Length: 191
Image 1 (cartoon, rainbow, N blue to C red):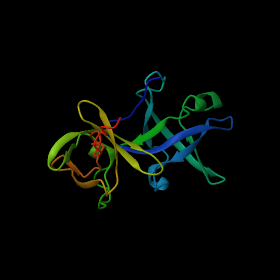
Image 2: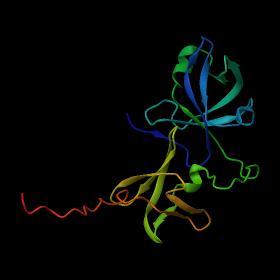
Image 3: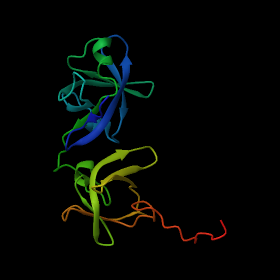
Image 4: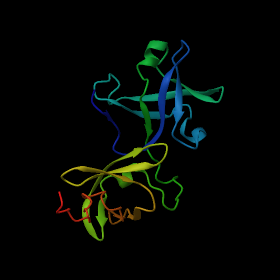
């Protein structure tokens, strides 16, 4: 199974979990802290699905968001039965970002702003950010060094500066993240 393709820009707002009932409802995992803004009737979402999915390259439109036992459930236009709902399970929903209404937060960036940045260590380029992976404990920056991919935790202790305008990110990684650690112990001649 190939990896799921995602849009080049926009905001990831949710993931479809599983069918709910028989009339096309789908349980939703929220990736936004403002569902009232992101899940309004008529909202259109780009789908991130595996390349072989019949939904590849398509969008869906929200009819309604409801809450059942503190679980978000969506109803989408054209998804009217359980089989159709199940065909969308695990799809990630993306919306286009409205640049004018985005609040400016210090030290907060969208994935599309970070992808393509040149990563520098001590002022020297070590690679380019190819993607951002999100996990419950922290986000990981995937840095393409040309020879390999390096997973860099997106934490202040390592990422010392981000300059979107200049297209750079400065890092201070621990020894061994970008190179093999040097063994300071001399080899024993007694072997």
